[in-house]
Length: 495
Figure (cartoon, rainbow, N blue to C red):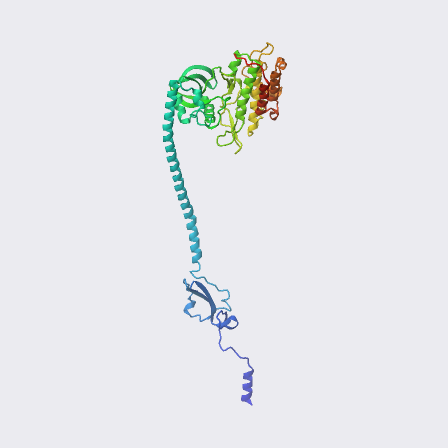
């Protein structure tokens, strides 16, 4: 019985594992059941096969060479010795980081090389373009120099033989076509050929001389050095803008020359022997027809300045800003032309650009509109400058009307506000008269006895509204005077 009992007791004891120190590991081999295996250590490995990275996990002998932890570009193994320790065990082959690193290097190279090559290509293109432009202009200059030389010879020959006059040349094809006088390349040549004959006027700007150019009279306005900006502004406007008009002073040339060891700034224009309207009214009385002719021609010139002409041969709108009888010249046909554009302002609707210039000079205080005197004018609005021209035009119209004979009566010439301010009024004196007291020149009662002069008086008043926007426009005045001229049937009288 004893051996049987011992055998039964032995069989009743639970079975012990046949091996000790074994671990459960995650196994990704196809022969593993339940995705686990038992071993003394766990491993995870990667190897590169035909460009594809293959991962393996399972059990391994810890003494295996593969557990040393060596990782190469194509193969690597990591081992661990705890339960299921290879579940999250991961490693990275040297080759796996290579694409990203390579890509990073490539991006860096692109960031450096692309702008560099782009800059080089752009520089080459710009250089090529500049070279072509220089070559093209050089060819044009060579061609034009021959053309202008031939033209100058023709002008000189015509002047000597009497086949042409300056007026004819100025209206012929020898102009630039932009209404800016002679071609720019000829202007300095012309200036050097002018002989100054007599001084016909002086002012704060400098002097005006009558000059002779191959037997033709021209006017030479010599600017003082302190008024260089006015000379530059007039030169700029005349050379870049379509200004050829019967009632705008004709421009011939502009030059900077040296005489008597000093620099002189010349502006050469058509010469008008009657001089300025201011001088003309001092010694001449007018009939109604001449009065209307002077007034109409001035407003025609002002309309041409104020209007913008669109197109390749167009011009921007221009406001004069210093309109007065001294800046208006009287022609042989008793029409007027507007001069002195040194303070002019230009405006283009296409780009809404307002070019005021940088001339520090102000206009003439006696002719300034109220909003200018009290510094309320909108400097950013071109219409504001046009409205100041209308105020000044009304004053010029008043000067003309006073010198017009009605029923045998006429007043002596007087400047606007002669009875309210001194000869050279200050801003404060003008401000009190036209801004504070809101006074305007007194219109002679005798004008109302003539229908034409009565209409002119009405226009004057509508030019002098305190509110700039309420004033007439130049175009409206032109149309009104045109109707008066059409209905005027008196015989012409010549002085």
